[in-house]
Every structure is written in structure tokens, then in C-alpha cells.
Length: 106
Image (cartoon, rainbow, N blue to C red; front, side, top):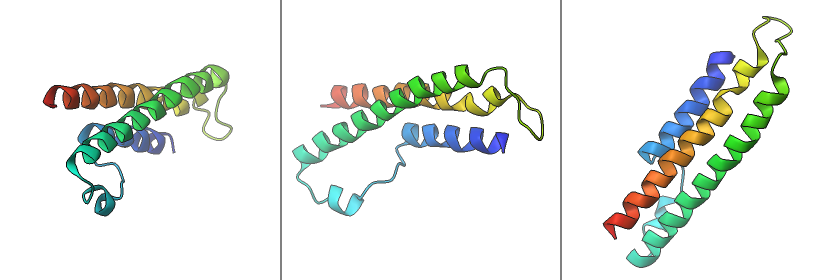
């Protein structure tokens, strides 16, 4: 269970870095080029904001669960929650990287 949480959240941040997040590409690709690029930036901005929410709420979750242990296996519960703020920070980093690289290309 512990490694599954780490795997899923880190794979999610990798998805932001590589750009393989879910979207309706059939609608997205039919838009005119100027709208296409503006919408791509808006989506990246929304994903980056989601990363900020993960970072903020994940940090709070780690702080609130520090010192408690799993009832069955007795591993520290904060170890289960550490990937949440880490994933949020990585999403922010990768999102900003995409935003700045897109602005340089324009």
C-alpha cells in the first residue's frame, strides 16, 4: 500500500512532465492555432494550480499525521503521505517549465 501511493503520485507528476495527461484531443486539435495554444497554456496553468493545492494540503496532511503509525503494519503514517506534497512540488516545477518554454517559443 505504501509503495502504491508513492508510485501513483510520482507517475502522475511524471505525466505532467512528459505531457501525457488526459484531455479531449479530438476537440482540442480542431480548434484554430491561436486558440489551441491559448487553451494549452490555460490547461497547463490549471494543472500547475492543482499542484499548488497538492503541495499546500499535502504538507498539512503530513504535519497532522506525524507521529502516528499504521494499525496493522506499524509504519509511520506520514511516510504514506509524504508523496502528496512532493508530487505537488514536482507538478508545479514541471508546469512552470512548460509555461516558460511555451512563452519562449511564441
